[in-house]
Image 1: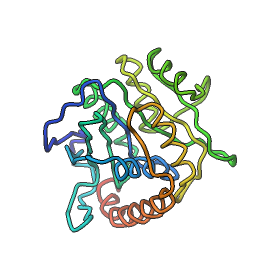
Image 2: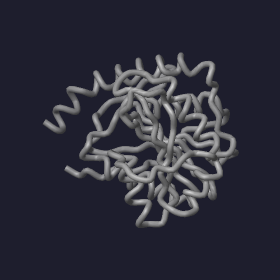
Image 3: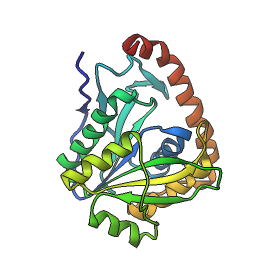
Image 4: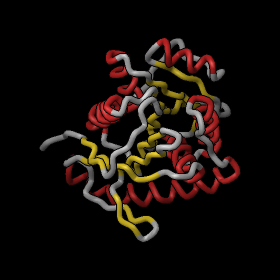
Amino acid sequence: MNNEVAVREIKRVNIEGGFVIDGFPYAGLANAIATESMINTMSQFDLAGVLDSELFPPISIIRDEKPGFPARIFVNETLKVAVFSSYLTPHESLHREVARCMLNWANEHKCALLVSASAVKSDEEPSVIGVATTDEARKRLAEAGIPILKNGTVPGIPGILLNEGSITNTNVIVLLYKGKDTGPDFRAGAEICMAVSKLVPGASCDLRNLMNEAEMVEQQMKAAEEEAGPLRDAIYG
């Protein structure tokens, strides 16, 4: 079975010199909460494409009476910002393909920076540090006042984005936050929103509504994961 992950574009977009934000859900859902809040807060986001693969669970996500793919690309051409958003967490076997697909799309559209996020297990209050692939990306972190990680590990799709970005000289920043293992984490989501807004001009979140966003995202993703569970088991065994 072909495990390629491909972008199916719905409309042509021009975000040259712009930004790509990885909004795939990871532990604690803070990353997904942050990006959903951005899409809802920042106006003029349009559906520009979807990610698809034969190894994605065959499922349609219905929202506001409209069916849709679980993994989508929303673009704000005015701000030159693209968000990769998903209701499902990709199986571990697809992490490399998803990361490479995201990087290739960002490079094809001549974007200046790709931003992702990953959780760090800790009982402390959420705070954000960053790691970057290039001197230019590290300079962006320094100018934003975000501390830079010296030693550590970054798993999953964010880790692959860093590895692939480092050998292709692509500007990638991964924000590392201290969050919970499961459930909604609106505090960490708020921390990510604030950090991304320092890196991506025009990016913003309605922090007052983040708690409601967290609950909504958790419910939607929990329902999607439950429905996709048997389908995923049939694919991966």
